[in-house]
Length: 393
Image (cartoon, rainbow, N blue to C red; front, top):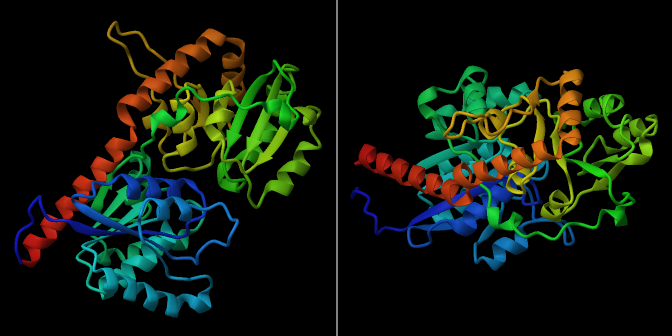
């Protein structure tokens, strides 16, 4: 087999569980749209069927970018055999040199189909420290012989994957998420009064799927320690999910219930961030939380639990004179006293919010730009293709 040259163009299968709007899906779409078309030909494959018309999805954006989309149509366990065959046929149709997948189901299904179709390089993307479904870890471990590399989104996820997932360290690499900082510059603030908020109050924002992982149930338990004490403060909860009804019911028991607002799913996140004073991340576990990166790019301070990816994003740094440019605003999950104290300190000190916000924005600009993420994936793909070519040659 001939050796790889820089002039060759390589077909890349970008595989995802589904194409409805989400953090991992957004990263895949940005990657597909931005990779160097002089070297790579991307196509996207969704394990689940095409989203229904009217559903919030990335299908339109991919289509407008001229990127082919295939659907394996795996919608239930009964559809799995036909779906895997369909996926195998997709790989045979396009004959990609690289299969790059994101999220557990896409990782598992695409590695099975890609190897049987003869795809030379198979790379899985591990985007969260899976602490809920142990069987995910078992299946990942059992099928690691089919995988060349595992891309983890943070050092915390990499450590978890090695220790708990039992994946060999030699197969692990870390590529952090990236963000397009231009989307958060000169943004028009959202008019929050249209959602029932009062003008002139501090706005504290939470964005995420309303699921146990995100810890919003615990966040509501902390309200007596900060929100109830502040008549000039409101909590905005953006997102939807299986726990929404439970959380809304829990809020009705709070004395400050009129200052807690559920916004549901929103697409105007930059505008909401621009109108807010502080972002909270009360999660039980994470990977590399995109919403924290979005808040940092918006110049907001963040109070977060010490979950995967947070140390890399919010760790304190020193300037040239040796003074800390920002203090880490983090605590252990469940440490209500520390969590509330950090919120109160920031809400009481506008100058501190400004200093941390400036530091956060600069850190994103320097270390987490979308262009760097794309370049890191391209470098990994070329390295693995070269390795596969030499090994087979």
